[in-house]
Image (cartoon, rainbow over all chains, first blue to last red; front, side):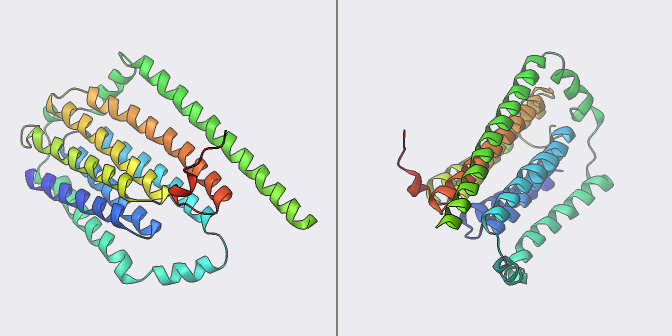
Length: 175
Length: 102
């Protein structure tokens, strides 16, 4: 268990260094996924399976997919196909693949009884949920209001953006 | 969770946070700055979970859920602003957005 923690920590730090020193945004996103997966592994080792699942679903899943969508909107056009083919070379994906392979081996080792946590050593999702909707219920409401504010803000900005693009297209056709 | 010292978990969180700060400071691409902000939020969440695991209390994971909500709200608005900035300046260089217009 101890070794698994240090290996996952090394993977998280290495992947994060590659994120902040990367030049291509897609490569940085790929390494950031690896970094978040490593942090999820650490949560699992620390006895927080609920946090580990949320880390994979929300951070590595939803948030980074949003980033990928924005990347796609910023780089439209047919030349993206050529670039995609050029980017999909082994030297680009081999780094993240090695890091995730180590993480997978570690996960299999932990799952097959390399160091299973006793029930007393982990904080179960049940206790977390009971705490979330017990003493922290006000915080949950505040988080929902915050998410609503984020939704309204993003909608407002995107709405104006769409109108601005339409105006530009109309202006271009008039000239 | 006695096998792993709590200091090591906190050191890892501190290293990840420092990497995020370094990313914000050294990059000029606004997309990378937003990614570095995500790294910093994630490091803060890691510190909470480490502390929660140390005392075997669910509060750490509860704070993790709240940080997750903050990160999700922040990234949605931030990415909308990035798209807005790209349509305005045709670049993602943060220095181009240094002037405010009232």
